[in-house]
Image 1 (cartoon, one colour):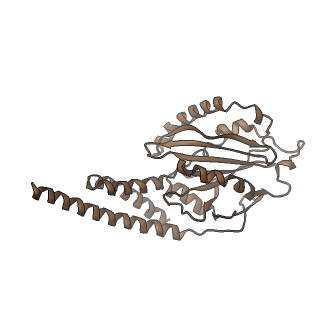
Image 2 (cartoon, rainbow, N blue to C red):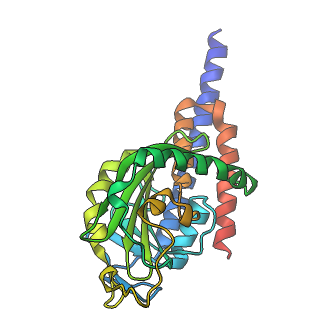
Image 3 (cartoon, one colour):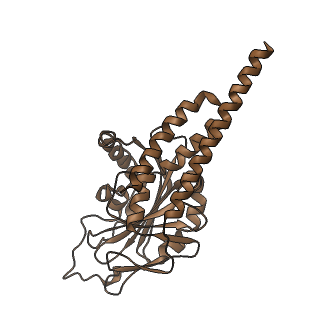
Length: 300
């Protein structure tokens, strides 16, 4: 009996040691990816040519190409060529366990009227949004991505009329992920369209994201002639959507949800170590899938 117990303990120790070595190798790969990214600070002229971004204290900027790589290849989201860049906290990496970032896009939809901002019933709007999300899951599954479940508001929509900005937060669950994702949405309105800054984090980073909202809102400024107040009723196009439509997200289907999938598979790997050899095969399979993804991306 003692011999059998000792054999089991030795096998368990060997498995854990091997597993720890694999996680060390995984961490080395993560470090290599992080070190390959080229961040910017200071003033950035955005690709659309109508605004500038002053990278706020405590953040770094990733350009368009690198941001698409992060959101699609590392975070396992559908490729979105509309992504212009990302703001990443200076003390975090895009693959850190507690990493998060603001993904930046632009929507050239015209001037968004804000007349309805004070009249929207956001409880009713949330019900409609959940139905819309459910309807899109069939297509997501066909494309090989997990289903999305919109849990509810993490922060009720708020429109700042003085700054012409709209922001709200959604709590989202991707597939069977053990942690829910936070999508904190900012819309900075301009004369001919709007910038979208979507904070992608886990719910555990909600308070940290929220404390940075004010500086993020003020870091992006439309150039003269492109500001919300520069609108000309006789010449400019008016968007088909108002504030309520922006929150509902029907106009921005591709922007709606991003997930930090990479963060979750690392957490799963660490959890398996503590549980022992029984889940070793599971981790090897997940690790192989992700290493294949990383290798493919690196050769492009």
